[in-house]
Image (tube, rainbow, N blue to C red):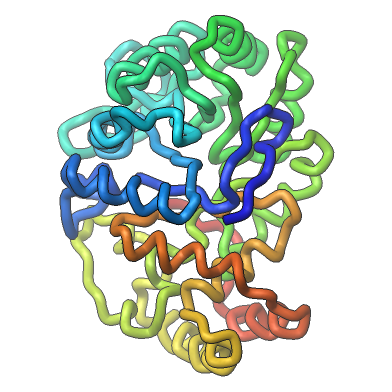
Length: 335
């Protein structure tokens, strides 16, 4: 495993991070529900392979992901760097409507009182007295950034959190948070969608991350499984499932994806790796301070993912990989 300092924080994190959106199950991930025992085995595998960075959020299964992790972390909390999020809640206490799902109405609220309540709720579900990192899940323009930054800095002073960051944002949002008068520590990590099929937002963001010393954490690098191989294209999902709502489920993209897999196969054979490992290695090569967030749900997924760190792709291979998908890349991918 490789490790790095998380942005301007004092946290030492594995380059590969465990994403736990799928752990929450529900209608968004309709193929299976996880158990506390499965979550514990997943953390066993992470520890065995050196993955110490875990990302979750309150709305992943409306509390389910945090609760499963809270149970699985008992007795080994200090083995992991634990990151969750704030701003999205279903308490009915105001904010902007974000979505309704599985019987809950979720609002986006970045006011100080909401941020503090979000953190307290996560501490309870995760059974811990501090969080290593907290991200604003969706940056909200309705409430002053200065007040949000002030609340996050207060939580650091109170010992409730150690660092904070942004998710689902724009470079201008990072600049605004960094310019807040209340800022002391500042934004340590920016978590944004980035993959070889939709690389544009990330590339726009890289200069801002470099300027403000923030780690760029990519999610969606495997496009919810669609970059794991051509067989995945045959799968079908419930209408509520996130995988039914992204472009790659549509037949019009399948031929382009099959051509890409055919073009990538010789590179995979040369490096003795899977399509997934190849896509992950491509992403890591795009920016020096990159954190690779991967939604691993089984212990074998962890063993497979860490292998991508061993790959050394040439500039020619990296360019050839992107050339193979250039015709089907999309500018905006809204889930």
